[in-house]
Amino acid sequence: MARVEDGRPYGWGQLYAALLTIKGLAEAGRVEPVSARQLERTAGNPRNICWQLLGEAGHQAFLARERGGTVADAAVVVMTDAVGLIPARRESRSGLKQQEAKEFRQGYEARLAVYRKEWEGLVG
Image 1 (cartoon, rainbow, N blue to C red):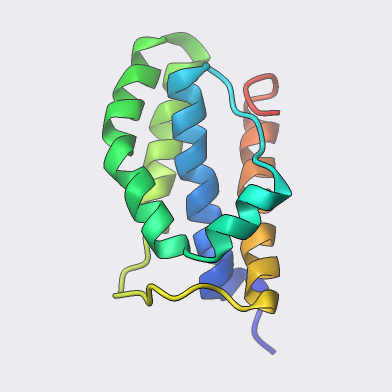
Image 2 (image 1 turned 45 degrees about the vertical axis):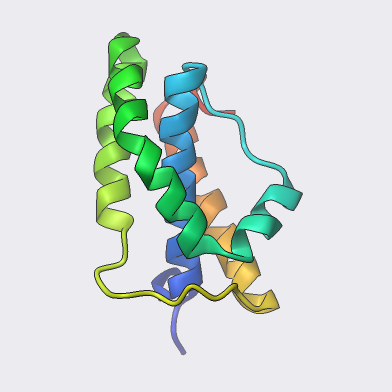
């Protein structure tokens, strides 16, 4: 049986968490988890939402780095993670089915937990 961690929806959740972490570091110097409603909405169109967030990520990484200290250090790691999490193949623009949306949420939560552990105080 395949592991959920190897699946496309889980990967989209991981990428989404990384991109929102960059955004939070840039805008507030810390990251707060998104609501269940926001996760559900993103699962309806993960490719396009991540594409949109990627369009802003470079500028946000720049702003996060300007904050200095731990925020700047975290920005380097998270931006590198984000690049590695982009699927290396053309992806469907369709939304995720109910089970896939759960896997998406698991990926999001797992990536955020890694960041929370690594930078206690920066990630809520």
